[in-house]
Amino acid sequence: MLLKFRLRSEQELCGRMKQKKFPPAVIDSTMRFLKEKKFIDDSLFSRAWLDSRLKRSIGIRRIKNELRQKGIKPALIEGSVEAVREGYNEDEVVRSLISRKLRSLKGLDIRKTKQRLYAFLFRRGFSSDAIADNLNQILKDES
Image (cartoon, rainbow, N blue to C red; front, side):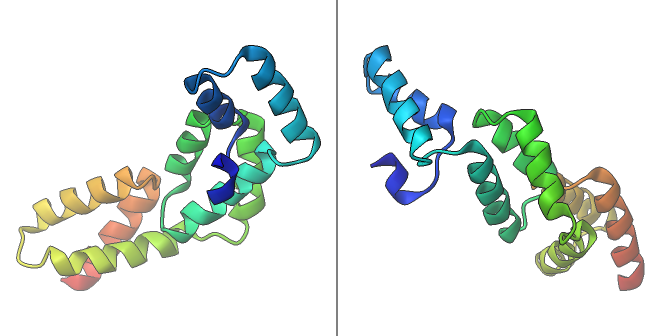
């Protein structure tokens, strides 16, 4: 049932089975079976997770952290990130989010606007360099 709605990492599935109090022998045999049949594949999961989160304008830093929490090995995470980084433009995504968010922050002091935008983008997982560069550029153009 867990694999019906979305892909799961090996650690997620194993944790859920432990939570449901399955015996360790059953968990091991089930995990082995699922790996053999390619129902769980951490590299496929990490690429799919990365793609779905990037479509929702989430930054790579946050996505990497989410994948680590889901038990994906650092080498797999880096491989997945490198595979998508070529077609991904962080500056473009940051500019788009700043423009959208600026509409709701009209009328606020420029310093407060800058703080809120920076915090918003940082929580979404964008690099501080990309945030600062694009924020300064857009706010300079706005004035």
